[in-house]
Length: 267
Image 1 (cartoon, rainbow, N blue to C red):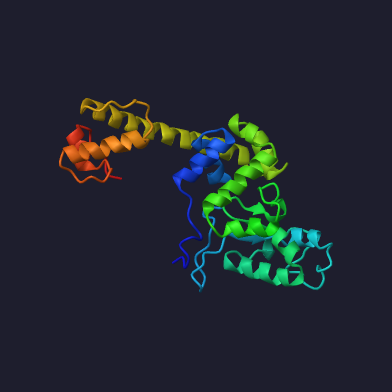
Image 2 (cartoon, rainbow, N blue to C red):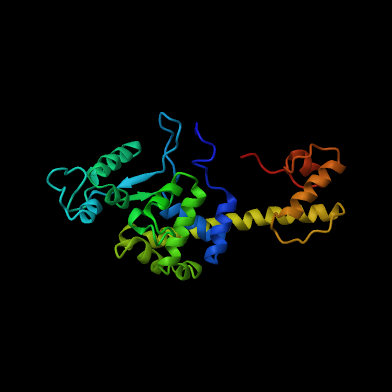
């Protein structure tokens, strides 16, 4: 359980919509990037205090670079001239690695970890919109929405919003993942993810269009645009009130029957 309701807030649809507006693209594009490039959840399970720490990976090779390699011999598990997968411990243990490195050099340690849902490196804090590293780290604890905002700013700062809008996944993956992007099929995975989310959105639009048409047959005057906005929600509630149904805004079996809509199949 999160000990502070203001911290560790999960991503919601409004965050994705805001990111899409900022990038000038669709929610499907944002969700495609999240599904391929993001870490799943931006948070780990709560620790003993109830705080949900942000997901991080401490990069020993980056710490070595940030500190000029002066800890490579004395602390080889924290500072390494080369990237080594075996040094990762995962989960909360990454925060312990970060803590131990911070004892040696706090600024370098926090610059050497990747943070949150998009795993933006600490040394990229300015590109993510924060002049001060401490401010960048601080927002990682607040919400996945702010973590997503860091990712959006990073994409913009690196000129990747253009390829994203154009669905130029090779250019996007090259800029985001580096020149070795093709080895992990990032470009093809992103293209497939976009196709999946666009199909899902089209299916959802079809359901909303049918709902709006049914509400109009019931006497409302809605734009039939496949978008469930505030006017459609208000019409659903008003219809439920008129029909003597529970006024909850949910188009469940009773509301669908009253509107003459086919019942949705059970999942």
